[in-house]
Image 1 (cartoon, rainbow, N blue to C red):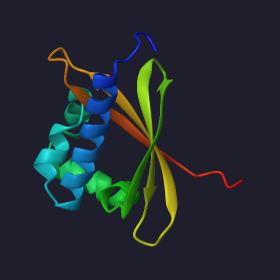
Image 2 (cartoon, one colour; image 1 turned 45 degrees about the horizontal axis):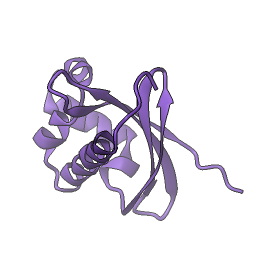
Image 3 (tube, rainbow, N blue to C red; image 1 turned 135 degrees about the vertical axis):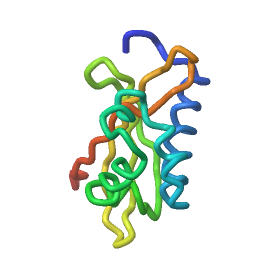
Length: 120
């Protein structure tokens, strides 16, 4: 990563992801939208647009039954937190959360990509 993240940064990243997932669970679109980075908020323009996208394309994130944090790595210059999510039907999904530190030093979610979990 461009700079080594402190334990405080790593904890803050996990807290933001957890808080957004909890906001989705509570159907609190306004709070969930606030955890998105400014570019994401600008892209979707409204809480309603953002929530429609999450409900239709990220059901494992929107209604996860379980969350397990994996390693923190780097993708395209962004800190990337690996998260394993269990969907309501018991399937496990791997999510890669791209994180972006704001000028305020707060962390926000700059993107989330779902990938299949490779079976070993």
